[in-house]
Length: 435
Figure 1 (cartoon, rainbow, N blue to C red):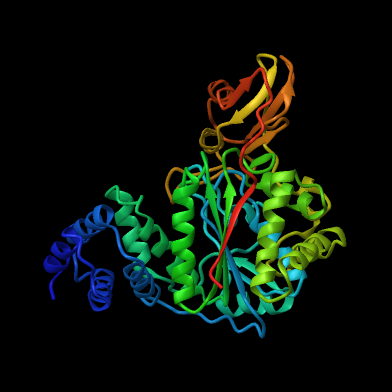
Figure 2: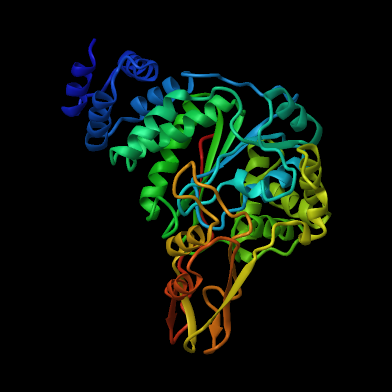
């Protein structure tokens, strides 16, 4: 076979065989197939798509391009993955809840890029917290505390690293089969027994509509199930920032508050639902029983203690749990006030994320540095009535940026109305199960 023949076949909307997909993946990873030919194939896939079988084959070929891990924790391991959003600190809440209820959570996370945040960046706002753990230490911590959150360990999915970089440079990112293969290859290579996916939908998510988010979710669940894993997906709302904070240290503080029982309704509902789905996947009870267990882990403080234990094991300062003065504090804070009376009918999630990035909380490229203290704290949210001059939010930054210009831009994220608009969709829109 030749890459020319394979490109031609896919260009004509024909299905590629398992052997052809394996051959292409191995050839591109090794360098035998050049970028320009792989780019042509990716573009052909964007136009012709892939069948569910082709997508599963590509996912497995990518997963097997590097290390295939098998966490030896002595119990059922559940991984949780979010497709990314603004203010999404749910991993820091649902992972300790699941661990407190007897589920092992070996979680490998990434850094933020663009307007979406990364769990690893958030945890590094805790003084001393180590996110680069050797695999033995990583698994050892899971055995001790029930959870560990680390950056990628080992040589996982080198095919995805090369293919994703090429997709990013050739405008071939927005293909649902390619998105599915990228996410699920890493999840399968990480070796968890169960996978819970949080697929964001709305203004601040990659998937803007429920139908396209559901299409991606069902495909990922199908691929995970084909690979022999217990897999499910929650479709969750990202039409406005999640919770009241956006930024790194600010989001960790809000996650801690959530584990103390003080979460805003949207953050609480999504975090508890994700944690309950992790428990259900591990066979801990019925859906209703798992919700009750998750709620109890918050109310009795056991989930908060799991977070404290993880921080301590990974070298972080556990005093942050009780004293937020140990977090990085922004050098400058700018209060934003309402310019008119009215109901807040919308908050642009994507614009909020971009403004947070301009304040220093996000990065334009993988090599960019970030300001761990930077971000936004919302005083008001969708549905609230505000009067002119009332405080809407506070911008935080320690970076050199044009705060006056950013403040003016930030005022544009709010949409006002004379009547209160009731959101049509729930925070958890749908749960899709593969078992």
